Length: 187
Picture (cartoon, rainbow, N blue to C red):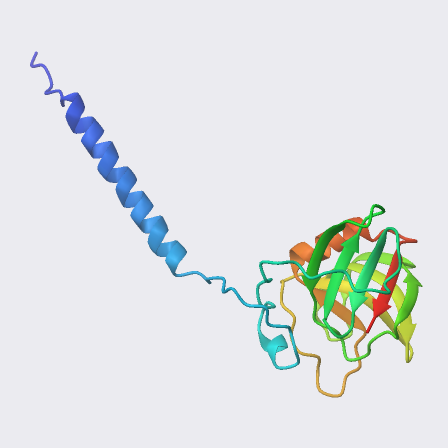
């Protein structure tokens, strides 16, 4: 019976190395075709909200606004279109930019009154992590994120009280903003 030819070990090692390099090359090409972050501090605006995601955060976090109270709270700046999650020791746990709705709450202190895991927003978008804290002009004002991660501009002529967040920020605010949590709205 003939003995089958056996490949030397260097041939096996070479073959596996070539295969691994090919796999890394394919993954590199795929990664280079994806979106790339840009270092910018652009704020979301009506014209920027057509973008599927807000611009990336600046490398230096923004300071919690003066006059936003003390203690554990959510701070929402209307002018900066930014939220801070502040713990009881006054440390900022997270800060991020948001897309405001067309109806904004008045500056003041509110309390998280209700939370809802998911629903359809007044703009027809499926939303989750809804944290209600105010009402104005017959609309509920709440933080939420779109299930698909988008934030389309509000429909023409439609009043919306939803303050949209990125998905990760929506999850963080949901975990932080339990019922009874203070929400400080500043200019």
